[in-house]
Amino acid sequence: MIRFLVIIISVLLFYMEPIFGLFSPIELQGDFYVLVPRFLIMYLIFVSIYYDRKRAMLYGLIFGLLYDVFFIDIIGLYSFIYPLMCLVASLIAKYIHQHLLVATILTLVLVALVELLLFLFYTFIGIKSMTYTEFFQFNLIPTMIANLVFILMFGWGFKYILLNRFKQKALLLQK
Image (cartoon, rainbow, N blue to C red; front, side, top):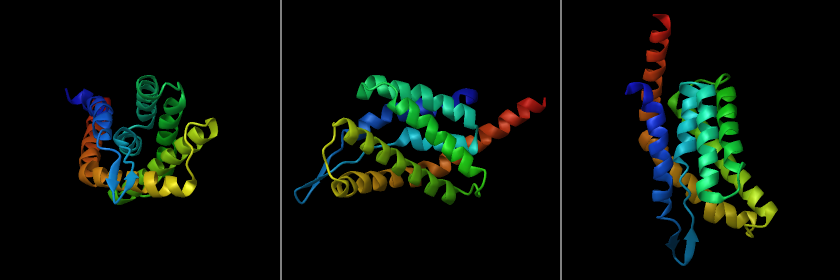
């Protein structure tokens, strides 16, 4: 069972995102703020930093393709962005300390990059018609705050689980 814990958490987060997406948008003083949960990509970034880059990229490809098929109907967008963010996270993690605070900041920066890439793509093909200021004020900042709360609540748990799984994997390879 412990062997499948990494993938089980990924599946649970994949199914949790649309559930938490139901709480969005939030209306405050006549303005609508969009909170986009990015739980899965944050977890996959942690997997690429603390466990295994290849596995994170594979999970990113699989879940990105599932996300494309089930939620947006543009095949290839998330299945390209998710593995790319896992690759970038693992390459950056080679040169920085893998402390939880640093991993959290890196994760939030990469989630912001995901949101920006998606906004630019949707603007380019004409799906979104909002200004950059509206995007930052009503989409990006609320999304980052919501995802920061999530990562502050679960980041230490992700790190603990992934490092223990990494140690177990190393012990099995030594036997």
